[in-house]
Structure formats: structure tokens, C-alpha cells
Length: 132
Image (cartoon, rainbow, N blue to C red):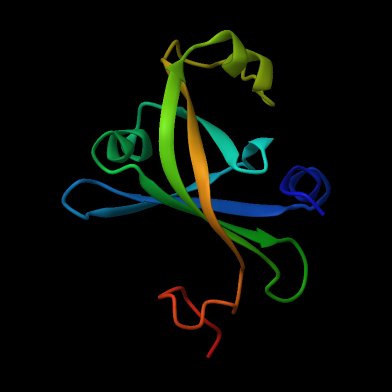
């Protein structure tokens, strides 16, 4: 199953983790990524802490936990490659619209997928979290 098929068919919750240039960590709830191809994903974000962190540190991790019993899901290790502000593509990809939205800039941030691991396990010897 491709990542595009996976995220289109599986329900769950996602967390995008970033750190600034000094290593101060942040984690934020994010919708599933927009899978551009099997090597690239994108997230739409406002100019908040996650976006700020990515200006000085391009690395991020996205953790997706599938809905239901147990601990199934995926971990994506990412590197920012570019971004667009309020672009036509961003508006085309948006899944939600809010009537009371503030007029804030939005960014479509593209990431190279460096590694994909299951939610638990498969991290032996590479520094990734493992089930104990």
C-alpha cells in the first residue's frame, strides 16, 4: 500500500514534532499529510511555533496513530525542502474551511521523506523508539 493510499484509507491522529535551532522541542496535532509522491509530503500550517521552528531547523518527525485498539501507525522522519505562502496549490489542497478564520498567512510546507517506520518497533540500532 502506498503512503497516499494509506493516509486516504486509515483514520487516526497525527503529531508533527519540530525543534528550533537551539534544540527546543515542540509537538503539535496535525492532520494527515498531503502526499505529493512517495518521497514528498506537505503540511498546511499557520505562522506559529511549528512553522517558526522549521525556519532554523528543517528536520521534523510525524507520528500517526491509527484509531482503534492497539498501537498501529507510522512514523515519518522528514526534512523540509521548500514552502509556499498562500499559493494556489495550498488553497486547492485545503480540506477544511472555517467561517470565522482570521486573515492570517498560511504556508504549504514540503518535506522530503527520509525514513518511514511503523509506530512501534523496527527501530533497532538506528536510534528510533522501540517497544519495551
